[in-house]
Image 1 (cartoon, rainbow, N blue to C red):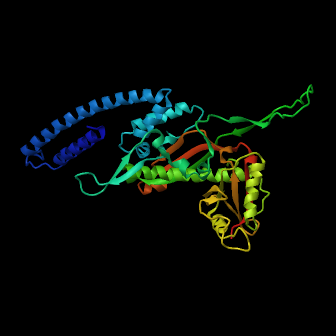
Image 2 (image 1 turned 135 degrees about the horizontal axis):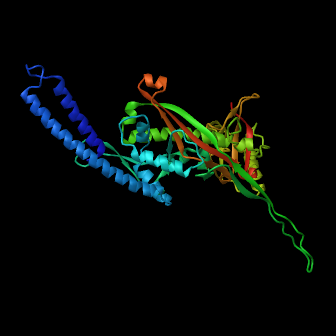
Image 3 (image 1 turned 60 degrees about the horizontal axis):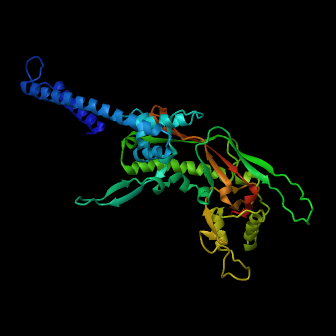
Length: 424
């Protein structure tokens, strides 16, 4: 029997014993009647038995956790990933941190191991592994021999998991390079200028040329979200509630990282593509097929191979109603919602609308998206506060999530954008 079930059984027995003790039926000084005494003694015996079973189960669970800790603390990351993906519950971790009666020993141990691995990180709450932001396959199938429809969560390992956070990142959809587990500031060297070759006549010396090197840097920057969950929700263990909370945090983080990667450059933000100084010489004040080809040409002339566009939905709408040739309306610049000039398109409202100066303008970006780096410096820092005044008064729990990451562009020549696309 699981520890939680034993605790529930013990609580039920104690409640029955308290009910008997609080309502004596005997006339003799308010003592228990003979029937009550016998029933109380039976419940007492059952309680002692349950407490012994609970002690044994605690011992077994602790032994299992120590064995699991050896796997977690080992050098084989795939074992750590497997344990996290099959056993970790974000809801249980938050419930335990809020002081609710749940068995969150594994989640606390996992948090300790992640903190050990990220020795340079200053976690203020639970260290939550990024692996938890993964989409689990959920089926809605009525069980054989049983009425109704159940929600059945099926966990697949390894490559069968679909990462929610990354799948929601538009930049990741286009192929941005993700670097995980970074510690401290990171410099990535790159070749800026290569050696130059040349044809020479027989017995003629080659002209010497030197290679030039540069680097891109990633430094920890922080993004966070503050939200509330009800105590009842945190006590739920159903897969749909678990997935709902995971997806909520994943969506918030994805939007923050995408916005920084596309534009970023404000206070405390990473430097994104537009702010990094990519080529913005193409004007789309009057959108045209020729302008689209110009964007592609700029990237290819820099010896890069672009692999996709990112734009706002309103840009896609405008291009789908703009003819390639002004004298005809039979063929549009963008003929399908998900492709343009033979390249895939991702649409996102995180591509900003610039309202100063008027008229309102937005951007369309083309490039080799693998040259955009997204670096993660830590696990997800989750701080649960059940005593925050507003949440406490409603019986809710305040939860703050923080993520440390940075954005860098390996080659700004790999991207081109038109930043004056009409937004009206």
